Image (tube, rainbow, N blue to C red; front, side, top):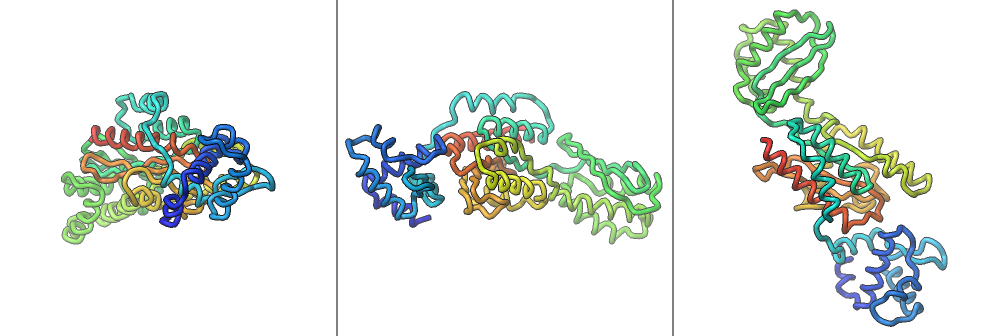
Length: 354
């Protein structure tokens, strides 16, 4: 991207203003911007021919493109990147947008999942894009564990955390379990829980089973070990990635190829079980990051843009992220402060609850 920033510093004022106005006009309308449009409200008196020459120079540099002969110009991906890095003016979110986001977070509901679901819906509603919210892993210590038999091949492990959060996870127990083996398995686990998180408990269980092999019934031991499979896979639960506002992208202007590409993007999101990549995008830099078109190798995002920001807990550790996906002609000046504001708000609310 350094080439683009060098180009920007080497431009004279007129060229820079033509470039900025073409990009801003395109982002506002989605249509190519012509020289006559620019001539009408240009800061100095210049002819349409002069502006056309400047636009041709910008096209030669790879910053603008003309989709049709004799039509106006639109920015290329390189041009958009240069605009976002060097000319984009970002302020605070406007009051109406802020109030809509705030309104979703006003309840005292303790369920973080429900809170983040409402945040995602508000974010997609305010931005008219699709929102992505990456929920934090639950890292509070466990207070109590219970096994509940539902059928010979289905059981529930109930995890009660020290902060009051309760999770029920379905799994397939080993054959032959009895009510007494389930009780024994739960008693064994509760004897070693001692305020450990799920990750810490996994290590302890392995050590304790090795040490106390004779004390624990074979059926109970099998149940504990099969239950561990569920806990180990918990970090990959697709529910951690909340996607809202798909219809905003599917009903917007665009040809059949655009719609097919967007459907492919959502298929990717539905299947994406390992979403560490999404968090890595946010962790790669401070504050809001913008990925334009093919810059982003995650999901099928060519032709779309992703604006993403991490959020942090009270210890300033990144625990999740919020983002908005839309066409490359997003109103970046408006979307960036909304995403930034939402991420900070979510971080604060989660820190307050913990």
